[in-house]
Length: 492
Image (cartoon, rainbow, N blue to C red; front, side, top):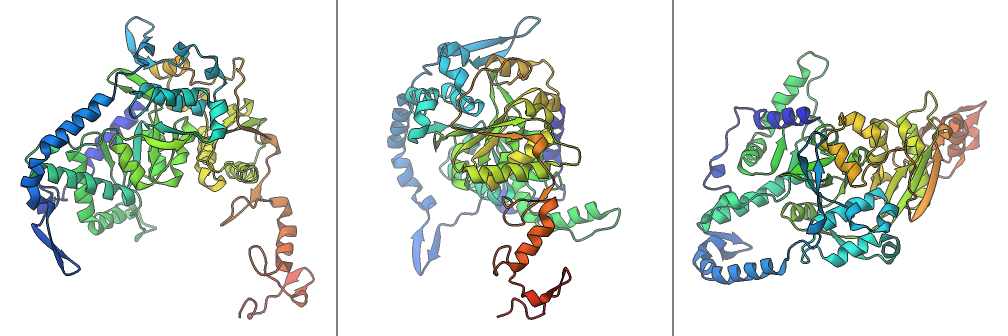
């Protein structure tokens, strides 16, 4: 896993076409063009850059304000809970903020998805952005969640695709240019958390059915998006903490799942669980890997990039117990349509869904990712699969720091051991052996129809009034089991 990520990062740095060159306005001295004056609606406005002297005049006041803000943040009150993770042969893998060291029995009853929010709050607690009271709210989740209280959350990283990633890089570039104009160091402008930008939404197929189809399509891709790719290539080199994955590497969620998902971060010797917010609703696919993640808007993503905590309602968690095993011939699509129908009926909008039970061992990581990917369809913030042996087998994490950390911090599920009772807001259950082949959609995946009932359902649709699953076909058009639809049917 680590080797694949390393190779992808090398590829991201090298794979942009060498023929791409930055346009003059993307020089190292200036990221974007600036004008001393511009016109809007017939009114001439002075450029902010022309006000440089006034800006410099108030700089001491701004610095005083910044010092005041900085002084408001105090030392982490949970610093005493920083615990060493020892290596089996001596030494240590790093340190981590230990949940067990809190000696609070409420932790064992918390869903795993809430434990990730708790760990983040403890690690980032400064009594300014994240307060000790926020930690208590999460610890007391069983009582506070029904009250719809707000908490701050700092994800470990941000995922962007090119539609929303380009504006984010433009904003950072403008900030660099402003720093240059003010005579300061533009290298100080960087994302404060790791940002992965995957370029995947531009691809179109012009050439097919030939051996060189992939290369031909990629050549056209670079020709059409030359200026945009040049800008992003500049951004990949100009900013620290930002990885730009070039086109042709795969769909953003596949790349996130196979290469970018860390599961456990080790930053300068500090271990903590991976979590992500992305500018795409289907960022939830990563939940199948045991990484808490969901989609947000571009403004929220940029705020997270700049180190600001997200304000979110402490969610309820629906516990979804899985048992049994899928029968032969039943696919992950059949399973996810069944799960979607159950969850839509139950109502999970604004909530986490956490899967558990002995049936988890029968689901591959691909099956889990398929279910997690459908979170927007069944309305949950995320469909979460805690890290277990299946996850570790996929990641090839066999006894090293990641597995030891997850176990030590009560973030790992071992279904071979007795399970402590966890509390959920509500409970659902599904025996996988009861899932059967089915169809649904295309617009409403929760309207599932078993394959054995398709003929009956189709004929019922013919009789229904015009609308969703209704065609109002006259009886005289149905003879001997066959349907004769006049060409005027459905016309005004």
